[in-house]
Length: 166
Image (cartoon, rainbow, N blue to C red; front, side, top):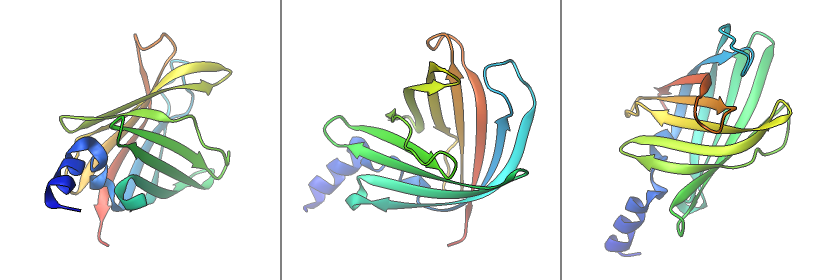
């Protein structure tokens, strides 16, 4: 592949998640109850490992979290569609064992925003993932749900990622 093609591909969005490749200590804050006006947060930590796959069109990460209820494992598969120039994000864990509907979106000005309609608590809600405050050694991720089509959002999960040595 020539240099011009490589540069064009890097600018089309496929490199947007490159910051995430590596090992991370993850500090979680997660609302104990969602969409009920709750203010009680669960705090726990985990270790995540992210790597590129499919020649850079994908990123897979695996995380092990140490929660009071016991350890949990999760996995995220991110796939870049070069034609649409968008990412699709699929998540699973060792509790459910199925992939979620994809979160679709991308990055603008260093901030990632991704959306989906998901079945949550017996209803289909708008869900949102945000990646922000991205530096070479840290970033923040948030999950939020909206029961009113996006007019208001409840942030229910916050993660602070700190890069670990390889």
